[in-house]
Image (cartoon, rainbow, N blue to C red; front, side, top):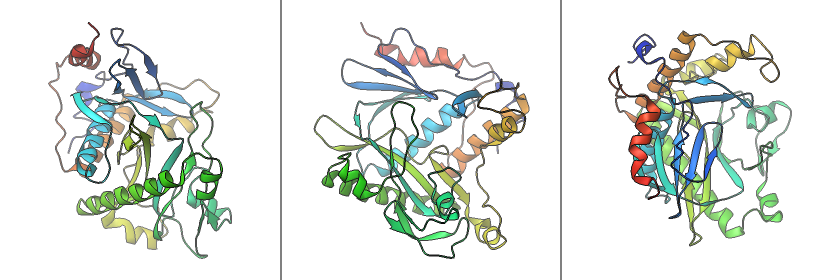
Length: 327
């Protein structure tokens, strides 16, 4: 297993930004940077930036590569269920995909009563709600308990930085966010993808507790899976071997907890208002090791570290994207 000590030579091996001036139509999000090409394709570069509290806290070595390659693993193993946007992978941090019209509903599938955000079923359940997202849950459930069956908990997708809001299927149709046919198809696709993910995770000694999906439509109107799938950032994974004993003891499941940096910062300042203190290198490298462990456990593949004297990540990305530069 790759440890924080193994990663010490790579402390500066990060992709903080992915500005490639030779490429057109740049859009920089919190983690990904996109370029729309004239042929209708989109270059998506996943940086190593770690985002929390509506700001960038730091960059984690290999984070972008882990997310890109984990999504690649799953896209290849679910394309029989749903077509996806992938065209090619010219670089470990880059996917070239078909440009889609993203549907305005984010699909979250949950198999357990879990979560910490205001839109999570656990938060709502503990506040006394039993009917949510068009589903009614029984009384007497405990934190992180398995749901009677997986449920879809859709939210609005706010493109302007606003906060996502819970939706019911009836609201989705009333607001004309999706057509009845689209909602029916999205629901079936999401549940099938989640079932595949849970089955394969179980074979790796993991529980996939919940995950989110983003879908779009192509020029022909087909529904296509976009963004990422079943990565450590988009999915909640628990270790199956210790789940039941920890659940019975009232303890949180053992997970790939990537919130070391977030918790460290929150304990030292108001992260929404104050200047972020300098984050220790050891904390950053420990987080990088967790991302790599997640990749290896989820996929069953070994993560290959580059030579210690490898070229800078941005230089490598630019070199690999040269064929896409306009003539």
